[in-house]
Length: 237
Image (cartoon, rainbow, N blue to C red):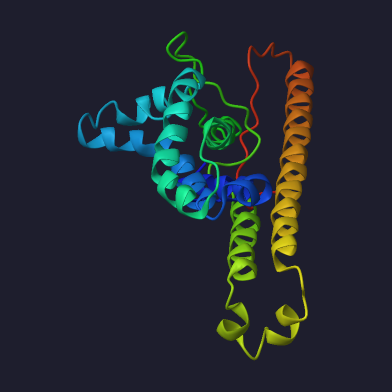
């Protein structure tokens, strides 16, 4: 999956479950953490011959995520501690736990959204270097990106305190009459997450059906296939 879509997945998770508890810092934190595993692409400048072979390696492994998430949670807690103390809020272990949980989800979903593509990833490092791919969606999926991008933009506008002035007069009659813009923003994110989940489920069912039909055709031709894969491509029938 492309890095932009990964970032949008992270912001959708933050907007749906964490922003209310952790505040507005949750969204940029989720965006950055969701993009972090793809930093391994910079190894191209060090070892261009093996960069693509090693891409989606250690930075995408579940083991490294388990190590990195608490560190990321502690780092953002340190950055927000001063703000929390000024406002009289708690910045103790409980808040660190929520930041860590958000980091875990963003990192975990990054690998999951790479696993569902045809490129795959190596999530079991350092215990296994097997590259796993589930062939559910293409590497670049416009539908996924558009749904998540629409949720991101809608959330930013609905949560923007001066949205009435910003879009006046076109959106003022609509937004001004909505007394619970924050709640509406939460539901926009939830609907986006539901749509993405349904879309991925359809992709799983289509892949399984395609592989089953292909195996039947091969068996009819007397071919005993060791492995059959159906690689998803956008804009095909």
